[in-house]
Image (cartoon, rainbow, N blue to C red):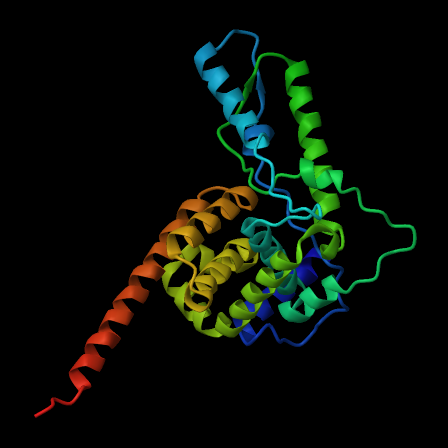
Length: 289
């Protein structure tokens, strides 16, 4: 199944490049979820018999718990209402559409209108525990196996909450305003997909272009961010910060730094193009005698 998914991704992203339309080479794939968020601060736990620097250990623990203290914004109906949730939902849809080789707008509508299974109940308390603004940090040093086990249990609990929230019917999780914003992001991304593929090919590092199947999330983040800047007109500092945070949460390695650089180059080139067009327009204005 993984090989089929990667085949769909490659043919979708680099062969047709036209509004996510491609020839299906396999049956319809199940709706995939996000890969697990970046857990560098938990996955790299180390136990030591000797006492390390207490100051460093305390700082690491504070950094670990700080991200968990940030709760998502919930409206009066008990649903997500922050723009971050809309961008995360849009990223989920684009990522899934690339894997399936389907149109993201249709996939979004399908997700919105999916029928609930008989007897299904969604625990809204999980929304209060879910933190879509957390991401990995520096490795955490633990002083005992028990402490490491406790952190791992907490990680498993967070992963279970994420799986429940992201797989739930969107109407139960997101407010109408957030669903509308997510759809606008998807429409903008589809409309600008072809032109932004050419731009992305110029700004991303060569190793990303050589392994597109392993960079689906990173490329999706770039498409969403570029489309939000050019179509929706959101101020680019906000969009860049949001894109970097999404990369920190769901991607590994240097992806956040690379995405930050790619988007800043994109904005700089965009501003240069706008100035050139404005200068050309001023030169073409006829002089009044």
